Image (cartoon, rainbow over all chains, first blue to last red; front, side, top):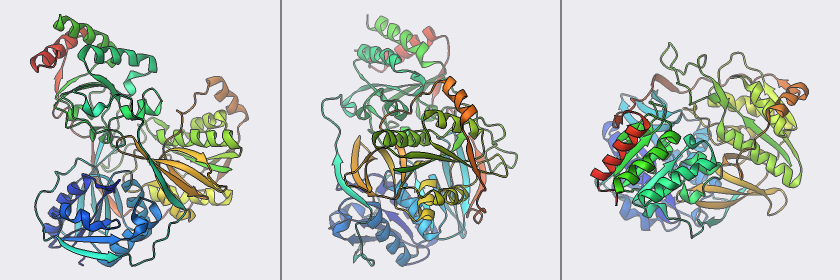
Length: 324
Length: 257
């Protein structure tokens, strides 16, 4: 253990290691190289050794085995993580900006009275401090910040670092939780999987995506018509699903689906980091938005600054004309 | 059920965001404010819980960013009580300072359930709901989409959202703080006439703000808008010209079959 180590929380969702873990390891390795410490990953799960082979980019793999960590609940997870951080006393704790991370990172920071930065995209070691570039305001503002106090708790936006492929020392340390883990007032009951029957947007080659700019449910028909013309399907960003206009199975982004179609046409989507996370690997992205500063244009290959509702019918006609 | 909802004002992202002269903070003087979207969902969820099984809904807000309009709207939607926390200036305090102020105002209310939007988009160095839970000494869970009473007395059943449209159902023993991502249904529409009526009848309980906590340990050195259109090749023209050009690109890429 060393005050120059960088600790990564391995994210385990439904018995699988989430990709963000490998991205966090890249960041941790780079930071540890600058601090002279180690990249340490902690996995909270019963029989965590099954995840160790995939965590080889770390210098140390700390496995906290406890049956109460079988499914996520904030109480036991926080108690176990806090105990590991207290024992390791790292320079920083890296946690993904995920469903679990949005609970644990701020709760850990509150428990430790530690500084927290959300939306981290870049992390630098600057002498005794950490320099962080973070995104906020829905991706419309960036901040460069400096954190001197240890440990810093940094919530990292998925997609900010390439997944680690290097090998570390990968020393495995099995530990029982140093504190008794109790079920607590928040208890896991069950996973609810999406209902089968709807279109699987992860399997579509062409997606017509709509966001807040679609304005009202009736306008969805414009997108449906374009999707039919192109032989694709309609999907959406979170506000459209929040309104109940499309089911959650059509949502693209952090809390929805991750898609990689041949064509992603984004209409009236600003492109917050949470949305980009689910679509930026698409082969071809064409974005349409009235706001020239919309972050969606940062990941699009082509952009058009125009009202989606004006362009949609014209595009249906143009595509039909092209197809004859 | 004694329900408390925290409502925050945030800069409207439809309008351009400006950086203050210091270069290290948002220029809130030029911003137009709207209610934080997830807080609006938190209010809706609280109203649904009240309607499904009784109770009271108290809305708590800090006084900045034209909050009165939002509070009158909350009253028109069905909030039973409004608590407004005084502010020395018209800008949002840090997440830690906000949480301290909310906790001081909420503690005497003795809530069974506190609902707060998972995040306000202008928060950078903290997340209010878990900080508030820590100050209230209550358990916390966030990224919640949907809350129901039960299954046993003194508990609620919540859905926590995971990737892939997967939900985890959790039981939460009360009292507790929940970070709301979405309500079970979209926030209700309320006609302007009812908001105007609320302006005449609704009363705000005004309370003093808490002493500010120590300064943030995160030093913001520079704020800047991200470079826009860094990758996109921007197309121009009328809608028919744009449509023709996009169709041409799709044809070139072999995407029209």
